Length: 321
Length: 297
Image 1 (cartoon, helix red, strand yellow):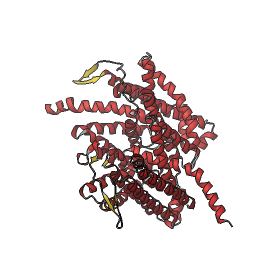
Image 2 (image 1 turned 30 degrees about the vertical axis):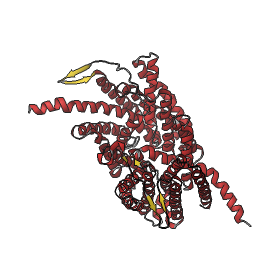
Image 3 (image 1 turned 180 degrees about the vertical axis):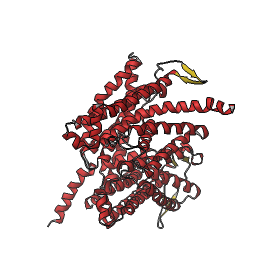
Image 4 (image 1 turned 60 degrees about the vertical axis):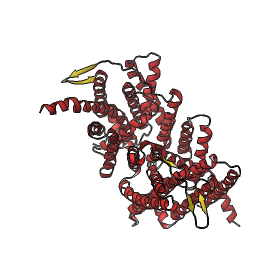
């Protein structure tokens, strides 16, 4: 885990430099793109908690991401307050995660993947066909908000400030998940992935642990989604589609499942790749798909599986006298 | 009384016939999916793209003048080696890891993305609509049905019967079922398990390709055609029981009838959520599906 923290430190430093340069050059486009990459990193983080630690492949995490985005947009259109949107999303996603968790945790393995997929698909179709939620157009006209942090106030319209704000939130999500996975509860989750039957023989309630992991992942996904309308000013049903869930899975597997930091680097890498390859051809999915297949076959721990051992060796050398 | 007869004749029966055509189509795609799952334990996320691949090969060969009837035989024959290579070259690479379900699912998901984008690159985003090979229609008891759809029902039924016969009544099918039941025992009795695996995958993929050729004239051909279709195929496989051939036939017919009849009473856009709802409910209550697995009884 310590090597992951070092990698997050590098990421934060690089991001702050990026934000400073971007602000100095009066850039909007790249700062906004990087903010979006961070928001998707939050979604990927939630997938990694399930896939990399508990061993549950969710093909429907967009359900919570999209729910957070729609809820936040609806709240902001009534009360333009960040904290109201954030609190509403946290509460509703916790309840939804609990209800969803009871449904999906009845099954394991491939069936888990398919049931999460089916649930997200239902939600996407329902939103897509509901006039009150803007149907296929989504909700537009989410107002610009000022985020009141007590000592300072950040406007969601300022690219650099909002980028740093999203960065800090995602880092907080990372720190909280990393801490949680290091506690006895986290060990239980990792044990679930290794052998669920034995965990039961040791006297633990596996249902509670799986449910808790699912609810935490749901909340992180929803709270990341809640940032989306603040950035873009609209939400669309695409946020709930399978492509969103699928992208998060690609991000995690390419970045490195079971590392948490892999989700962050993976998301930045994929966004970069999409905009670079996308400037030459619209068929960037071929490149991303091949990269992803290569990661599945050759790099079971993703990019971080290559990078992290080097950092671990460096750390080990420092601690030795 | 005559009102009810007229309602059946002009409203219910045509709708049910449309549902039956869709049902046959879905069963053809789902058959390959269920055989691959029953034998290899692999959820083939790229199955929809193989369905599209069959349709695109048919379109490409159709433009150079090959007749439809030849394509019906030729396309599955082309798909067989493709499927065989994919199984040996890709799936076997991650087949022996501890989390086989997840890794094979991810790998085939990636393959599906690459295939779908490749179709877009080669053929462009616009749909192709091949000519309907049999023109005209048939009228019986006052119900009109286009000839090609009638042909589809007949040939689809024949293909399903042939597959069931192959799996349950031939020596080859016995090998497949033996390998599905206990691969080590089957191997020690002389079944070439590796080839049976690759062969079954190729067979499933070829069935999807054949479905692509058959359905292209009705549903037209475009890069994402597999995506919409595979959802209902997955639902059918889950409800019927993963790896069960009888299950696919029963669930395929029932679910498409539900979809068709429901569309009469509420807006058709809600038929998809209802079908997915059935899938989620089935996974909750009886994840093994209506029928048992391939090779298990």
